[in-house]
Amino acid sequence: MKQVAVVSGKGGTGKTTVAASLAVLWKQRKILADCDVDASNLPLVLRARVEREEPFIAGKVAEIDPALCRNSGKCFEACRFEAVERTDGSYTINSLACEGCSVCALVCPQGAITMHEVESGRLFESSTAYGPMVHAALEPGRENSGKLVTSVRDTALERAKESDAEIILIDGSPGIGCPVIASLSGASLALVVVEPTLTGLQGMERVIAVARHFGVPCVVCINKADLSPPLSARIEQQCGTPAPGVDSHTTPVIGKIPFDRAVVEANSRLIPVVESAPSRVTRALEALAAAVLSRLYEGKGAE
Image (cartoon, rainbow, N blue to C red; front, side, top):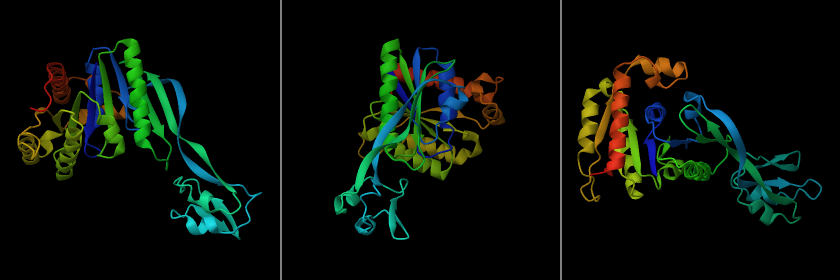
């Protein structure tokens, strides 16, 4: 079984547009996993229908028992996160500010503070016209997005084994933080989507470094490549230059997608762009889908 993670070093590069197109174009048995738990968009584009959901429990928050509290203020003084709020001499916990460190419970002389688990998000299993999908939604202000991503991937792997799927297609989070690490680790191949901007170039360099750290081979796709030919050329040059200390590996650019209003129109209609009328962008995405499969099954990632 192969696992392909579509990632980007920054948001707004078109990562989900590319991932949705691969989901449509690849005819192999597959499981889809949207690991962008902070802002999950793949279910919208692929018109996912939720079949099952469960709570994601991670982390704890403090709670003050007013019957036991004697308003000593020890918790208020000890909390570094200003999660303990004082009103008219009484104390309450702001659950959104609480980091679950338990210091308040430790210093309370009355034992009036307890820590309890909270629901940090929801895990969903959905059906689409292109295969089953696992995705999730992290509650605003909650932590442990990396753990929630791991739950998404673990569930996707279980479903893939049950259905004898050939590919798990992962739509990763943008950036290089914990959810990206959880999206990338253990993948067979990372497809890095980059836009021809300076921030896009810098983000690409960072996410490739993260992927290499975890031994995941990378290939690159330049989205909206014709908006800045000089920067697109610079990205290709950068990808063709061996990175210091990485055994002279390069990162091949296997696709360049032109800017096309058809993408905007397809997104506004909530359909994958490759299902719209044939155009420059649909042909480029079809070529990219074939190139990724070729790399995946020939075992060619970084060269």
